[in-house]
Image 1: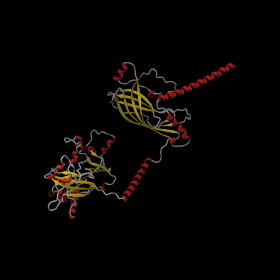
Image 2: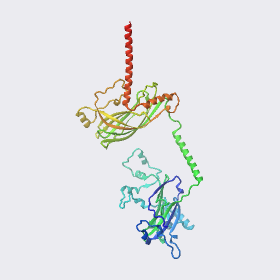
Image 3: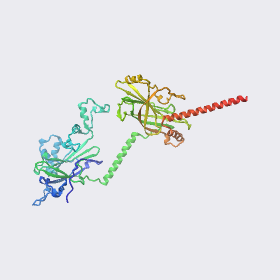
Image 4: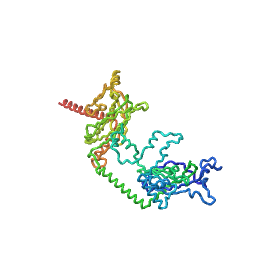
Length: 559
């Protein structure tokens, strides 16, 4: 029966292992199949097929009964970074004059010991370890596509020369990157320290000397069977992959005598014994336990809680984008206004900010500026009013969009405001903005050529100012124009003892939370509720005044 077909998949495979790589064992089997006069043989029954069974190339015994494969077949088990000397290295290091480095002298001593103990165990298969001066030229001309006419790009050529090494100590200039992202005039030392790939790799090549029997030890007959790379994270890269259930790999030589070889690579690493696995689990459990204790020591055991009867609001926000504005190079000035009663913030807390200036890009019919500007703040709400009719006010986020041109002239593009969400979680808010305008062409010409425009003296005038104490706020006569929108992304967290305590305070705080849960996030509804409250108060006052008038009238009639 014919053997399995050739394996043509010579790409690399990536594995990850938590076990020490020193336990890795590979079994490599190399065999010469036939010489050149068999390579072009196609039996009639194989016409129309692309693959040839390996049985076709099985050599036949000679008249004396001797099989050639007994001399041309080799099988050996190799460990990680195990050094197997080639015939070329044996001949080279026997000459003491050829030794230049301490590693060369070490190899010479090992080769002399092997000669005294009966010779090396390998014949054609040998290895290059991570300490050897060997470079696989095929790795420097890797193809990115399957096109036969592919030309390596400039990046591919430069990346082929990038070194991989461990960076234990860096120069002083290496720390500049923390504060300065771009180095316009790098020194030679800076380039030498930073032109590396930080992931340290250990490489091992399993080679084969495919020369004729009487010509072993020539560099031109060396061929790479397998390349293994291991990094510090336990990632093992094997090229080509382990044979497994696939067919063997083939090598077709192009030298004086064209020959065909096959070889297989199998993972024969010993399995861990149950006692070893149990010991390993104990060690890992102890390691993870110690790491957990270390993290707990960093965090501490005391969990910060707000004052009883207080709700803590923590907001991680982001100014996402602005779109629909007339001019380019936009930036946003924003601040959070806390209600005058029952709300407070830490003294160090900054409740305002300004984004960077951002150029716009076209998105459909609009121009969009993406800021991705983060901000954060926290505030505390102390509930003091026990009345069930009390509706707590909520902080308001105000924003002002401005533009800046080449001549440093700025223009107000719009004002907007939105009430912060009253429920915890992630929220995306879109704030519509407007700006005050003047009538006439002169005002627009001044805005275009000189810059500047009408501005609000108090940004809280966008909504109901916190300092307003009257009953009616009139904006009659204020001419405005709708402009664009600003997008905010808010992540709100709420913390209170009421979430965990079971006491009268919990009931008291729960009533506040119920109000907050039903509290509308839209300022218009808030204004309507405020108007209803004022109307009810005025009606009550009118009834009391009417009752007093009736009493006075009845007393006058009686007298």
